[in-house]
Length: 160
Image (tube, rainbow, N blue to C red; front, side, top):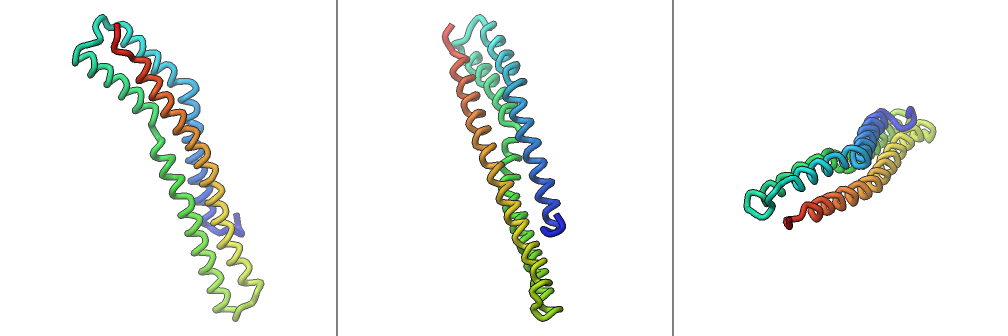
């Protein structure tokens, strides 16, 4: 952490929040989402009539409520995935500033410049690694959210 500079703390915090949200979404999909779908299905199956305009609107409302809970925090996860490479770039810039300061004060001494180069490359690498891990998890979660949404829409049928 010392070699990468202060920006690494921001990258670590953003990565922690991103993975906490990814784990929360995984928990929701594997545990609580089933209850939401079950509640919507039991309410829909308990209706005596399902073909009127109001029944279609109630069906659409049930699907929308479940989908809203299903896709909760997905946008924030995507935002953090987009933010992490930018934080890595910020670390690169601050590290290069250290290199230029070392060149200015020591006249190009390689040892003093090496700390700045390290502070420039480590945050970039950290931001990219965190982003790649988040992209993989987000791809899986987005696929699961879409399939669960499609399942609910096809399960709540209009026939009686």
